[in-house]
Image (tube, rainbow, N blue to C red):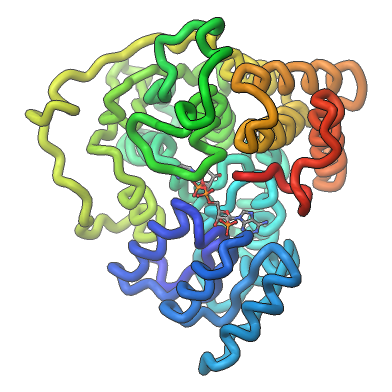
Length: 401
Ligand SMILES: NC(=O)c1ccc[n+]([C@@H]2O[C@H](COP(=O)([O-])OP(=O)(O)OC[C@H]3O[C@@H](n4cnc5c(N)ncnc54)[C@H](OP(=O)(O)O)[C@@H]3O)[C@@H](O)[C@H]2O)c1
């Protein structure tokens, strides 16, 4: 069981819930990193006494340094990717919780793996873009990844009860998001507020929009493929609006195992920190007679209305740099949608166009981290070019995420 963590993305939805779990389980917090939420990370630093904190911008780090100047022992304050990497490689921590949003999480995760840390992974973009870089390092550096995403945690828990090589198929469940049942035509007119109104989960802006477009499920298919060494042809997305079954595995003998419960991210977070132990949780106890759990339904996803799901399967099939390009284009397009600079259905149009252009030139089957980041930058630039925008946000992030 984890005794001490580093938390990348401490001010986000997963980050805040991770701190609640750590407090309840008596897990020490060695470092915290965040983007721009200065007040919150300052509050967290005073509460959890980490040795290092880091924020995205240099000017914010200077202010934070002043605000935390009276802390004893002193807290080191850093900024940018150097701060994330310094945090991820702190020798005192045994687990790095990757709860940052976006591909920016990849580099610190790679650094933590090289130090032999256990990774509790929420940041799915890391494996989508860089699975080919991450996975071979795990055995070389005696590191491991424990999933935090609820679907992957469910699959992991089910597979723990299955003999090796007995997996036939993964059934990855999806709530269907706020627009389940709508046609492509109807989706032309949805608003940002409607897209942010997820029926079952309260999450950060980027993942909430990804859930509305079903790109989140596409990213999860690729994440599951890497985590469980399972080709995407054997991963089927099942829309299950009640979000009670968090995913299922079908075994070679035809048996299907499912992991169930009311939606609550604190359980998968706790499990990733206590594995293989199962300690008391504080979630809402399961009640099969509750209205939400009383009737469980399953549907096929609508790939016409939600084309990003199919694009993710296509990207996984092509492999190489295409998933990274798809992910980067999606990050910028979602950022533009969150700033209300493009409409909902344009997100998929942009991602498709950038993927097509990449397949025409620039596609690589094998790549280094630098190659991948170059293609990532190219894809971000393409989305801005296609939409006539000059920048995503002042620091280059797709704003609003
Ligand atoms: N929320 C969920 O229930 C859930 C479930 C499964 C998987 N996930 C995955 O977990 C990740 C986080 O999701 P979330 O919902 O927690 O997102 P979120 O609420 O938007 O939080 C994102 C976190 O990343 C931080 N961040 C952004 N840029 C950063 C940078 N350059 N350096 C350091 N930190 C940075 C943010 O800081 P500031 O806010 O201070 O800018 C914030 O702490 C995503 O990859 C998501 O797909 C989330």
